[in-house]
Image (cartoon, rainbow over all chains, first blue to last red; front, side):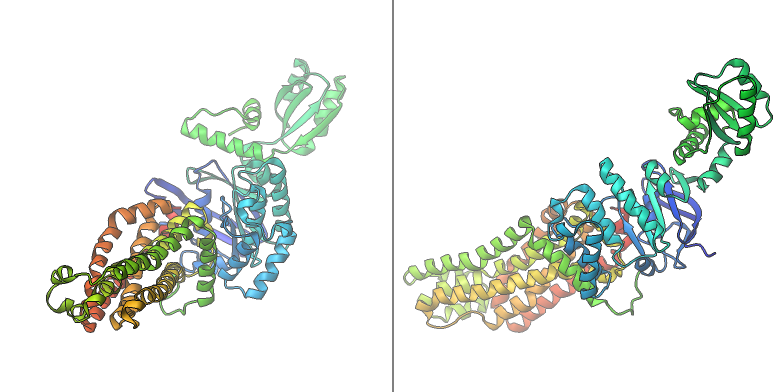
Length: 334
Length: 275
């Protein structure tokens, strides 16, 4: 399958330093890619390069077969962008912002008016259509900006920090909208964010950037397999596992490590199928097993593990995270 | 990244950008009030009061002022009856420099808003993400400043003509403005000065972070130089017609060179790098 987005050695510097350094990745059609990383990681620069508003110093990229550095307008005709700041003119009404953007995209005036109303209704903004944007909430502005990005029904969406500045309810609202956009029409979405919750809910693949360098790229489970040997399982014993049972578990070839928990143990297994073996051993030793479940690492676990690896390489101290604790305790971490 | 030079301009897109900017400007009191107040003061209130004052004085001697003018420049006024000389001198000639301040000021204020204002309001990046050719965007931004500047100065000049002729009617019993030279000044030199002002301010505002910063930079350093040059324009009204046209042509050439230079530097990359 031809990739919707491809980059090879994409690099861009500013007088303040290198913003993106040799980015190579690909995004398949219909896929949601989460670009993760702290502020200054290079996420926004990546979006700007992919949409052709910045030119690379080195490397190349393609979006739906167009080179953004050569044919930026062709790229921008098939992409929609939600910038970190909604970028709406506060002096205009919601309707004017959308209609005029549609016309600036070269869309017919009548069509622009109809599409604007459709989107305002869909995004629950029809009753605010003729209110100046300065009178709307941050959440409403984000919804409006998202509607604006969809005016021309783009095949690719770039969403740069779509939930920044939103309260929890508005965040859930926007994430639900993005989720719907991702599943309909098989849209390709690049989601640049440092909020892991939204990425975890939406992303098929993730790319972790730090200081402009790509440190991890792939499906969360692929990265997890790279980061950790095996899978974690939580065993509920009603109380912490005793030393004898712990040692017995550690004797099993399929167990890579055991961490006592207040209500049992966290066990690192070779495979998910090894869980019944562990449960059987504990039952045979007379322990009551109230529950046992394999717990694949969350995107959050993986992200912090990657961050920990980066910090380790850079010789930095970082706060130990859940993933860091687990990987460190069972010795399977990088 | 840019449209090829031979690609046709997309006028519907340019019109949409202009429409967006003008609707927004119309709703911005901080921009509209000075844009209307200054022309009203210069083109209506001032000629009215000066005209009334000149009419009130009986047979004023303007010989001293006229004698300071070089050679034949004062001849058209000296040839008039003495009681007509003051009102024609003041409303017909001495207010002339103020008329060029209007297109200059309006174009400079709007041009500052065009780019630095977009940055300030954090709307520039979303504009750059639209499929608008750079040269179309640049043209739209120029016209956003140019069209209102010319509209305000021409409408203001019509008002001036009504006021100046009205107030002078009891003395002159004839219409004395516009003369051919006035028309050259308003239709030819005024637009050139507006273009010069916006060419300077577009360059300044593309670098500034806020429209206030752009106005300060443009207002403090560059525009005073233009004002100084414009201040000499009353001489244009006394010069022969071909000379006035040539002066206008010179301003146009300078303005076009500056605009072209600005267009070359106007790239998405440069703007996006400063967002």
